[in-house]
Length: 256
Image (cartoon, rainbow, N blue to C red):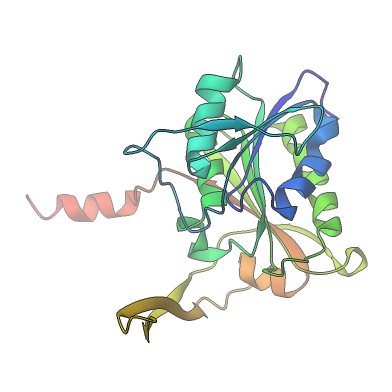
């Protein structure tokens, strides 16, 4: 287990009052010094957004006695930036984000505030992990997820995470005894087939509500969606360098 000198920054996108972040704190509190900075309201789907047109505010929180904890008026990425550059006296040894209510599998990672916080940490050269429980139930049981978090955090602090990489961890909504293990794998090629519901408010004004179906077009046996369906937690090494290197040569042939 890591020494007491390890410094861990906790954040999330569901807000400081969520059950998930309380469970994440419970999982990592014994691994070292913990500081928690979380949005003061839900920020799901914010992706890598940052606040540039409004002031950012931090409010000390009493929800986590015994540690420094703050509610932030901004996004999950704002929380990470403020933690690194304003609150902490040195770079943390680990950033953990979550535990998210709902899966962040496949291309959901692009929209996820939970994972964007982890990506921001990786961009800053800090080992970072995003954790998600595959349940949107407000009364979801996080006890099995806590055990998975402990295992992965301990291994990450012991072995390190490759530079430029963060970990995307998804945990099936199953009781402890039903979880089969942990699989290292790739993200599935899946996406949301979007549609907009047209609705009318009480003033007879039209508005639109985003909905749709999640389409797994991959159907391979080495993806996060495949293994979660089999009862395994998944770990996907995720990078922020989005360059498609194989396409560089093809584009060079355009003779631009």
